[in-house]
Amino acid sequence: MKLEQCLDEGLIKKDPRAVDRIEKSLEIAERFLRSAENNLKIEENEMAEIAAYNSAFHSARALLFAKGYVERSHYCLGVALKCLYGGELLDLIKVFDKIRVSRHNVQYGGALVSREEADFVVEFGEDFLRAARSELLNQG
Image (cartoon, rainbow, N blue to C red; front, side, top):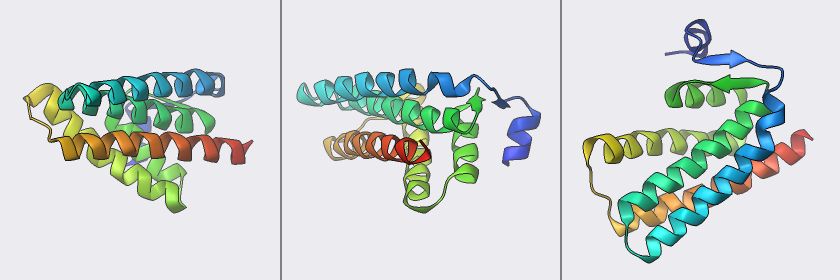
């Protein structure tokens, strides 16, 4: 699916008030990241991965909001971000999209998560939040 199709189907929409939602989305990303870290401490790897993905998802939404869009699809969020951003951030967005699939398999398919995978996803959530904040500051 391409961005045009996501727009045509209303899964990504222009919204002039989207920028007003950036800070709240970043706050939510922080909360989910803390939850992911706490779940790692008690060896709840699946919940850690789900929480870390949710953190990354809200970081991604903040980036989308900064461009004046809102989403109605996790998949189309990744599609839109790949079109709207480049450089190092694009590499992180590609990893985010792979984690989206993994999270889906955990949440809906009952897949198990190793400690190494959970650690990776939590670390990714931290890196993605940091990169999103940096990008948003640069967009100023």
